[in-house]
Image 1 (cartoon, rainbow, N blue to C red):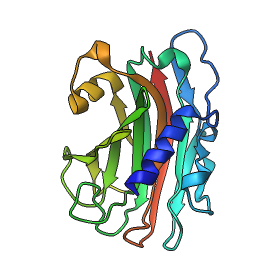
Image 2: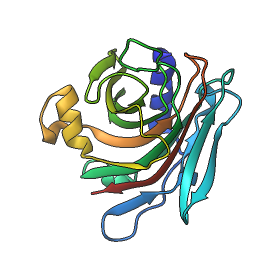
Image 3: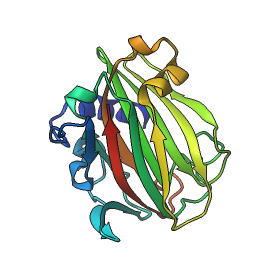
Length: 218
């Protein structure tokens, strides 16, 4: 899983799929749900995500069922934002939490919802994963992977309920990178992509969530 995720994010940063059109003046890009595309080389054959609407807002809906392979979606960020990004914001809403899931353990490495911020330093991808966990403690961080070409840190930002309620998050990707990986702000590598994943393959249990209002500002 760790190796395949590394392959996924290397391709995510390099591919043309999921590209977001150039933003209008104002240094703000809204990434619509249909900008997220499946990374087919590292996803199961059944795409359990769909684009829908909720109260006039376009949403990305994930409905995972046991027996399916996990599917990851990704979208590239605008070129102009890669070194100048100031914030990334989104909303999510979980409907079903996978059984006893906790990406930082103990528990199955599944999540009702997760958002990845990916940075590229030469050939190396360095990722921060924000998770809505079934169990665990909010604020827990763990080093999910360290390698020559791929690093990932995971942070639990929401645990348990309430379900069926939208929650909003705003992150400063560059400051978050320094917090997790060290160094100085001026040395932060390019912020290249956003990924999302809802899964229950390790716990073999259902998971459901919605995502909306992804915005990149710089």
